[in-house]
Image (cartoon, rainbow, N blue to C red; front, side):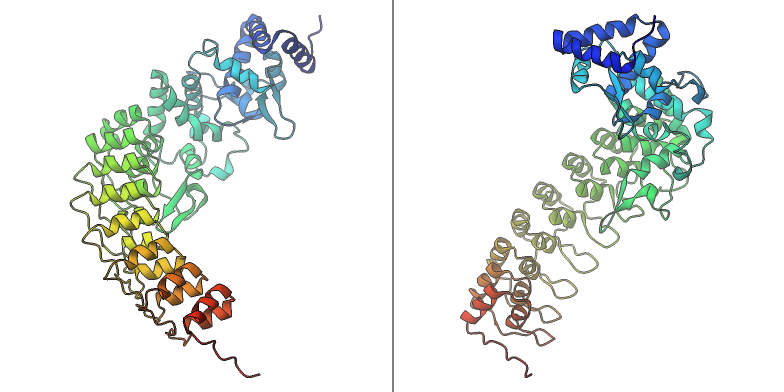
Length: 492
């Protein structure tokens, strides 16, 4: 008897859905899948598990290779991979391949909804998927691959998925077998191709912001060891096992990024607590990008990790990056009022500590218009509200340049703040505001009665001259209303 084609199966399934409702239709289809012979039934259920629980859509080749992995085997045989047409047949029309993207997907979103109500179909899918990924990565074929990610993907379609997502599956459901397989992989992880592929997806941070991806920058090449990976992924059970193994302690000095930095960067609270409590790894160490674990946590917005770090006396809240910028300056720059308060609550904090250019945390908060942060810092008696940087720029200058009216107002309430203080280029706050066309700030400054609206910079440019040149008509009108004369036009 001739078997129905995949197209006919889908048509039959759609008619059944229309007639019975999708839950009954899918239940009937699952029964037919399981009624096939053992090999077809196993392939059908496994394919459904991967398509419905994968972290991203799988290509047809990725799916076929995933189903070729034999648990317990030290080798991977691509010849065991079933064809996609075989898989579609075994799934009785529940999966299809998108013609445009060549990815395998469920025939309808309601299939996933139905499967989510039937946990008995797959048991522990993430544990099973972690075991399959790790078995593949531990195979002799993968271990023999070059560590250069650009040379191996085409011939090994399942490699990228396993490298990037095994940890996510393992963190959700970590079986004993997956734990053993993970330790096997991580024991010799530095130099393994999967580590390079994982890092390729990760943006590195420097003192100026996101600068690129680790694996995409040939200038960045440093050890990424098993404990680093487990900390990055946040798998507490693996970190605990690895830290108890003497071979995983770094005997060659401090690594470029410590496990604690990886965990802090990714907001892995449990790992941070474990490392600080049982295996403290250089809590104040600045890595190759000049950043400490505390700065990573602040820059990535992980407030709970910040609290954990600052709860340890061994963590110094004043250790800056390689440009002298402190954790408090980063928090002020990003407007993290809660973090600023936490940091100011540490007895050892230096709230007015400057970076290499002489900038204070207050100047960063003022520059970005973070009113609540500025208010919080100004309540700290050790903060100088008018402290200039190495170029003479004050917090008021920065706030005026950004047009931050409320910040300008609160700074001007402080008697220490000179509203007409020029920087080393003789640029006053008024001139800074006029240069940006910030009418509101210009009005506030002129209302002080202590500002010389005609004061030029060291290029003999007054606020009105600059506003005229840039065409800021509202600013021009304001300045003229305060008796500032229109600059003479050059003769033709």
